[in-house]
Length: 137
Image 1: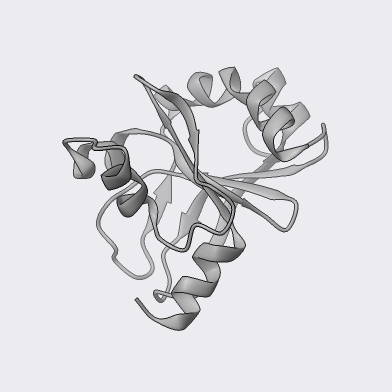
Image 2: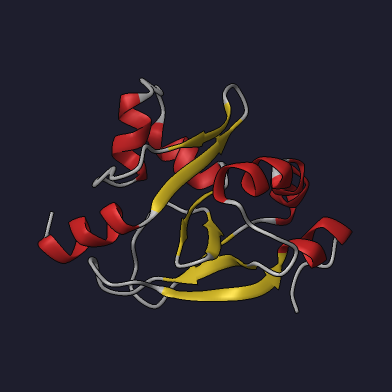
């Protein structure tokens, strides 16, 4: 892994919402990706989890969520509609763990860029709008 990718991973707080475990948050300073987080959890089907479970990170006062597996520059990884209620269910956990408030920006997707860079965040909303079921501002 490049230094820039490792720096990004260290600066963010990665998480994944798993049906069996609920919201799983990487420890502060975790310098690896979601794949490695799933390996630490001994999850048997990493590709399935990456494609189907909402995951993301908290960084610089923003939540960014997405799902997807294949890294194709320019493509998008977006939260699918069937996972919105799952994310909404965990808003109290996001509030508690990350101290987010009603106006914390939330992005429900990313446009894939170069490894080691912060990918463009898309589908912006905020905690309050998401709680009400309004997905994109």
